[in-house]
Image (cartoon, rainbow, N blue to C red):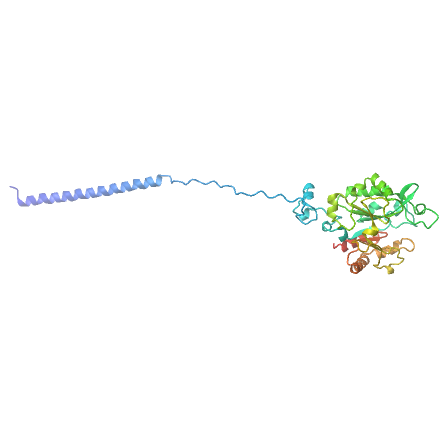
Length: 364
């Protein structure tokens, strides 16, 4: 029979063994749990994230811009949008517009709101067959227009069965064209047409002291292709702007001191369309603003600003054509009339500076 002490040893050994087995099982359980966790973590780390589908950017809807009204002036330069588009100008940029008679600011002004540099007896120059008895200018019409003159004044007589440009009246036994010198009206009209063709944004005014018929003038304008340039102005209607004249292609306005014997729409009798000052001053001291001719109810004013004593005086023009003299008289007349003098006519335009004076009066 085993000894009691031996039994205790066996039991102790069993207890120790069971503890070891339990510890081993605990270790194995812990190791198994760690391995499973690592495997799960690895799966999570290695698996690709589920990406949400990308939405393509849809283009923003931009409505088509409404077309510009062709009959409207969108940039305020005086020209309609349709005309600017057709001629390669930007209808929404005022700086892109052409200049009317050298200044953009004039484009939106009416004929009656503008001051015009004017030569008296424009045709009567030394280089166009006129002599010392009849000359009023040194340079020809082309030189005048190129220098900034925009109103041409012509005396037209019948001489040798032609419409000729002369200077003088019929107070003498000899024909004024014989006394003064002469050259054909058609030649002057050809100079005007040439200038217009080479200056697309120039507007001109022609005033006639006529001793021929309206039909004679029409014949001359037709034969030289000047007629298509003539603007027709209904009496009493508002004067167009310079831009409007350019758009229409009608860039010449003609006035005559005589009523026409036939109906011609572009032939305007100046006695209806404007009022004028006296013209035969023999000294600048007698210059006034008194309107002695024409229609004082009209919107146009003509200011004769030259001395005749008894002939045109170049020395007097050197004084009267100075800028301060012209501007002072024009401003005095503006105050008296309540409107600007539109046409300031001078002899020997190269003396002084009538063009600069007119620019000043126009605000430039």
